[in-house]
Every structure is written in C-alpha cells, then in structure tokens.
Image 1 (cartoon, rainbow, N blue to C red):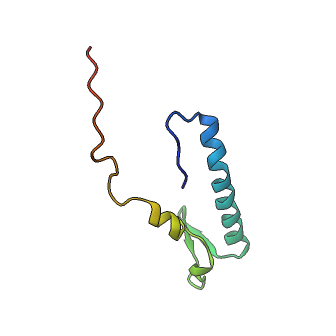
Image 2: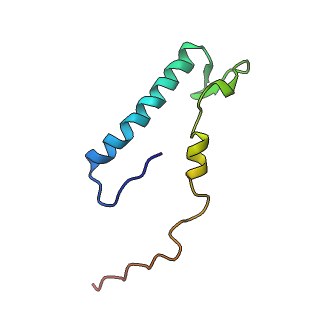
Length: 84
C-alpha cells in the first residue's frame, strides 16, 4: 500500500508501486520453491501442511492497521455541479 498524491503522473505511480510488486514477486517465488502452494481448478491454495505464519500473505499488519475501515472523505465539501 502506498499513497498517491493528487495529480501524480502514471510514471510516479509506477515508480511507487514497483518496490511492492517486487516484494510480492519474491514472496510468490519463495512459496513456489518451498512447494507450499497447490493450484486446483485455477485457484491457488496453501498446502495443508504449510505454516502460513512463515509467509507474508496479503497486506502486512502495519498496512492493515493503516487502511481505513470506513470512508475518510466525510466532511469534505462536494464539488459544485458544472453548468451544461
């Protein structure tokens, strides 16, 4: 998870996202090399004997804590409608 500033260019968003993409790829390769995954009917699952605590699956605890559980734009004035 990362913040995207208002008006960010596509290149800026890509630059911010690449480290996260690299981390996800490394974790996926690690899971594959450890034979911790099974794929059945196009769905990927951890094998039953796999210790899921040994892997980072999904958002980290810190990212989950930072992710709001409800809208954060309450109290923000609405943009007036443009006249046609």
